[in-house]
Amino acid sequence: MKKKWLTGIFASVLVLGACGSNGGTEEGGSESGETIEWRFGHLADENHIWHQTAMKFEELVEENSDGQMEITIYPNNSLGGETDTINSIQAGTADMVISGETLQNWAPNAALMAVPYAFRDLDHVKSVVEGEIGEQIKQEVSDQAGLTALYYHTRAPRNLTSNEPITSPDDLSGFSMRVPNVPLFLDVWQAAGASPQVMDFNEVFTGLQQGVIDGQENPVDLIQSGGLAEVQDYVNRTEHVYSWIYILVGNDQYNELSDDLKQVVQDAAAEAQTFGDELYETEIAEIEQELMDAGMEFVDVDQDAFREAMTPAVEASLSPEQLELYEQILAVE
Image (cartoon, rainbow, N blue to C red; front, side, top):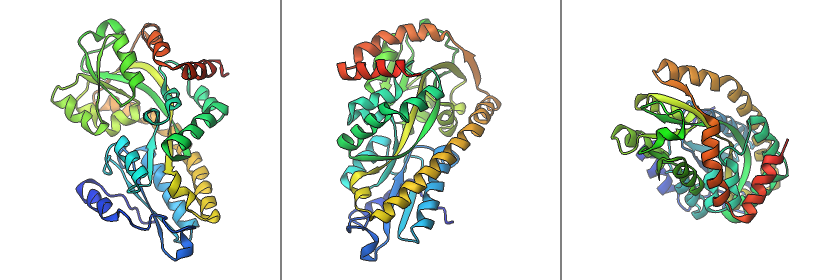
């Protein structure tokens, strides 16, 4: 299979040149005799689980559509940041993205995908995402963000990185940190005593290197993918968020496929789901070891203290509808 990932300025030029291209604009796609081309952007690097799984999805779609569909993958934010890519999908100049709690900027209940200390572990996450609550969130994302979820990844827990060990909220005074464009994250980290600011992930390395921020929080796979071991010394095991993230395509792009091609996409998504789950099982422990080998130290923290500091901010930040969904998540066995 030809691996078609493109990066940097070259990719941006291609995207601009592709505006208004076939991208599935003919009803049923292949009936016009044109190849349907989907542009798939995400923030991780080429070695990341998300990218490897995306390439598997690409391979399956292209093979099983008999060449009627082509997917070009743009890692490393080379289509722009997560929010930019979603906006591009809605404008018709991109087609696919990987996104999670950032979707709350369109679909408010997507905030529940990554609420601090709402999920006990990954089994709890899977029970929610594959149950009625997950279906409700997927439908809201479709209705309000115009995006169809194809498959998902569970995520390693989010941990706080720093250049000094942080073991309790008492250590956060004066600590400037990056958070994604998720209002709830701003609220909980302010409540815990830090000074959070929104920043795209592709700006984090430089921000840490230049001292604009003191730290950030992410799962270990993105800590590694972003090369943060070069600019951070500690991974503080706050494990404040267990969550999941969706692989999405624009509703318009998906709905313009013939029924046969929709089935090809759905079958590829199901197989990619299994492939990604297997990668996760083998790679997360290896990633932690590689970060330690690169010089990062993992620090145990007082998670109860962080939970106690953040929970009132969580409850105050949620709307009545979100709070009801949050309580339902807590009750899931």
